[in-house]
Length: 509
Image (cartoon, rainbow, N blue to C red; front, side, top):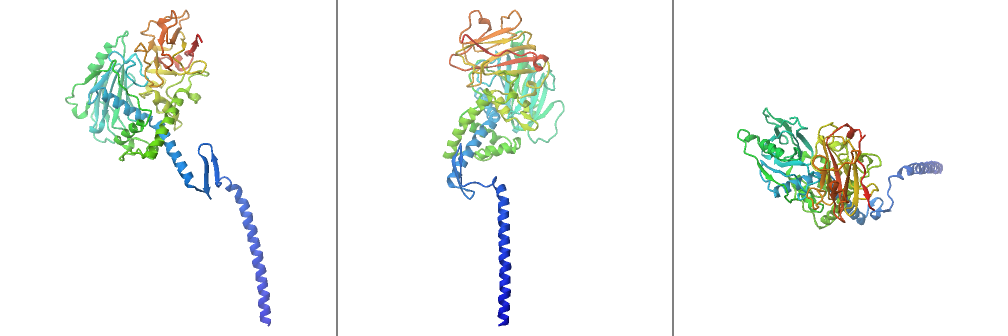
């Protein structure tokens, strides 16, 4: 009996202890939960949320529903399709150029296209000028190093298949305008290099060469003769007995070199990725392209769902590129305060600042232009060229060919050589096609009438204002246009901005 009472006594004590411990633990758990809740508030996902873009997004304890999974993957593929367009423009543009060159007759190493009578609006290029003797070619390094004989007194450059700068040739190059032989090495080339060349290496196999020759008293013939006599391209293995160069006159020839703005764009980009070494591109950008099915070694063949998404993405990508180019929101793109004049290079010729890529700057440039070189953006007084583009009038409205406008070029423009104004079509970003195949004026060739203060008023419209015919450039009714002011041999007043062009003013409104 005593033993039973003792057991009962100790049992009650044990139960009391356990009860107290449980209550204490309960209080501790409750305390812990109350401490954690404010932290969890920012990481837990409700069972349903509303998105402005995707609508209702639902979960089971953080697991996305089947409907949500479909929505977000469709959205992700769409976003990556848009980003592929914006980031792939340099490569697609290069591919379109090469396809255009081939269609215009350049099919072998040693062949050049030359505009002996200057380029006009029939040839569709991104924002070319009407005052340079363009000479253009491309080459492929898969068969080994290539020798380029560069002519004197030109502005030349080589760009790789992502439109990256490889080297300058001519006046801004290491030959200092004297001309010379350049040797371009393929990617990963590690064999002995002979003496006697300016040696550069390209990250890609295919590359494009541009030269600009200069008019002499308005005459292109001396530049054409010099280029033909001093320009060639051939394999290093042919250096002992190089083949003769061949020149095709592209003056007045109608052909296209501008990349597509529809699904064909992705196919142009895929051609580049399949042909070029993967090491030539950043892993991040190759991963972006891969995410929509563009991957080296694999066919680009999206299924019906993916193709529908990409067809939609290209529409938004094109709209985005046009907004970035024609209505930039980054104030750094504008040349002057309260002005619509814009620069071509945001972040320099590498589109980079503080080790960060200027994504919009790269898109802007490559959507409206070709040919990347420091000579077009670095401040070199009296050397190279500088650019200013404008798409809107002084009121902030897009330039409309139905209206008449005036632009004042103040006296004493800061040029060692000359300045020019060329009109372009916002659809093609090539020269505006009008009754005049050269929709431009320049201070060297045009018989411009000056004002009493030495400034020049230029007029734009479907018809010339009475008495202003010499200073007029035709536009097309119900069609947009934009213009680029080029400064050849820019002087200090251009760089310090003590001289600046006027805004484009609508008149007769």
